[in-house]
Structure formats: C-alpha cells, structure tokens
Length: 470
Image (cartoon, rainbow, N blue to C red; front, side, top):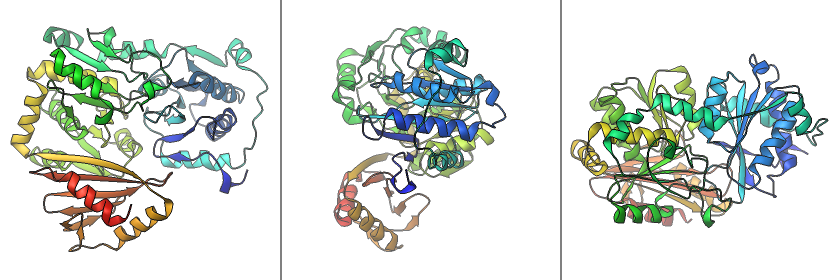
C-alpha cells in the first residue's frame, strides 16, 4: 500500500473513519502493529499498554483485535472489561505507569464512525511527533498476521482484563467533595447521550439520567453536546425545576452545561466559570492555557487577576503538552474540552461536571446569577461557530481570499484591525473577531465568531460565508 493511498489519516485527535469503509479490522490491526513497533523500546514498555473502548458498534471487538495484535508483539496489555470514558484510559495510562493508552472511540462523531485515540504515559493526548512516527510506520505495514488469538493471550497473561470503570469511580471519590454536593441538595439532570459517561455520577449523588443505556445509533443523532442536540434536557429543566443540567459527549471527555432556566451555557462561559471557581474558591494558581478559538473573556479575566495566559493552536494535544511540563491551573478549548490542575493533562467531562456541582454547592448561587456576575464585571460576550461543508476547490479558494486580506480590509461587514494566523485566519475588528480555519481531513471550513456588547455573530458569519463563496 503506497503512502498516496494510505486510508488511515490521523487528525487533531486520533484516527476516525467510517466503519466498514476505511475503519476495518484490517486497518485497526495495522495501526495497532504500528503502535507496538514505534513504542517497543519505550522505557516503560515492560509495564504494558492499556486499551479501552466506547459504546459504539463493534468497539469492544475492535479493542480486542488491537489488544491481540499488540500482545502478539510480546507486550503486556490491560484491556478494560467494559466500556469506559476516554479520560479513564488517560488516567490508567498514567496511574498504572503504562507506556501509553489506546481508546477505541470516535468521540462525538455520528454513529457510522469509529476511531483510535492515543494517550501518552502522562495521561495526556499523544503529541504530534509520536503520531507522525506511527503514520510513518504504517507505510510498511500491508497485512497483519496474529499467531495467537485473544483467548490464548489471556491464558498466558499477556492480555489482562481490568476493571477500568471501578478504578475511575474510586478516583472520583477521592477527588470530588461528594458530601458538600449532597448537603447542597441540588436537583440535577444529566444527559449521557448514550455514551460512556452513563451510570457514573448517579453512583455518588441522586440525579435524573437521560440516555443512560447503550444504543450504538445514539438515537439517530451525533453524541455531541452542542445546543441543537439538547432540546430534551433543556425542556426537562424548564418543566422540572432543576438546578443544573450536565451533558457529556460519546466518550465523555467533553462537557456542556445547561443553567437552571433551561438555557445552554456556551463553552466559553463554562470555561470562565470553572476558572473563576478554581481561582476564587479553591485558591489554585498557575497559568491558563487556551485554544486559539476561545473567548476574549478568558483574556480579560486573566489580565484583571494577573494570571499568565498562553494561547495555542486548536486541538487539545497542544494544551496537554503544556499541562505536562508547566504549572497550569486550567487548559481549555472552544468545544467544551477542559483540563484541570491536580487531575489530568486532559479533558474530562464527568470530572468537570462534578466540579460544577461542587461549584454550585460552594457559591450557593445559581448558574445564571454567576454568569450575570461575569457579564457585570467584564461585559457581555456572544459566541458562535459554523461548520460549513463545501467542495475542496471552494475551500482552497476561500483560504486564498483570507490569505490576501490585510488590516484595513473588510470581512463580514467589519473593518479588520489586525490579523493572527496562528491556526487559520483570525481577523480582529472593533467589537470582536472571526476565525476561518480549514479541516485537514475533509472539505470543511470551521468559522468562529465572537462579538461583545451586542450579539452580531450570526450576521457577521452569514456575510463572511457569502463573501467567501462557500
């Protein structure tokens, strides 16, 4: 198989593909063998590799296949005995002192997808250099033969089934103030979106749980905690007098919060309120790391409190890398992925959801009250993102238009004051900014916009899309 026709492409967070198209048992075997070969001389290889899986169609079988390939290379494999969250694999990779973790998941993608995420020995997202080595190794792997099957490898102790869910539950118990949450007597509703976060929070506190069963079709929706997918939980909150709604995505590394009025709290405010809680109430210190497409509200908060802020390209792996090496209080990306000091250099939707319960118990105020405090202190921020599917030709043309723009030009009806090309094209104007950024794996443009004072995001997005001809 030549490199030009290589079907396995790693994006910002692992390899994802359509099941039965390029996501096949044969390609999973190839990626697993490449992983084993790249890491065979790792200092911790004797401690093994941990593998877990989500609630998607055939995920367990894909995980068992990957485990058998790696174990056939004389590497010990800890295979979870049930589906687990992606952060659980990050935690196990770190706390079992393993070489790395493999998670079979396509996260929030539609049901026809599956994927292969890699977590490093520190429990963070695998860095780009290591992923590149695996991609390079794949070039020479055409077919994979396994001498011993799963049952033989289990008998020999090369593959060991491990209670990943139990490990994670015990960890949460040690990290979250469950008693404080119980004493606050909060009325909580949680939407697991048929994903791996189901039946965790209800082990600690009383909640109403939605979609807390395995359904590989995800109810014919994508398990992504964005506003358009959350009508049911928002409606339930409006009629049920709940204090908070928590939502996690398919592999439970991302979070969405719904306030007590049934209103969606955008990911920027979700990030800002957690930062406020960690800094004010938990008295934690350290730098803040944010993705390129996150709100300027975070910048304002950091400036006011003299907190060091670092901005990185989009993709949590860039945040993970800094969390591993520096003293980071919180790291977050635009899409609801948040990493917290003292936990993991990684996103964890369930952990962050429980931190939100702690936050409500500590402040004794509602989410809308806390949000209003932010608005009163820093002004109102409005945020929106559009993913525009187009053709490869139109995508290239749009990027050419963006690359030719300079300060003084206009975009979306706004005069450009300055430009930042850290990751895509970010155009600042008098009361906000817009980013145009291309997907690396499909004919798709992601367009992000934020305005302050008044909500002009939709108007600017629409005009920009029209101007770019997409």
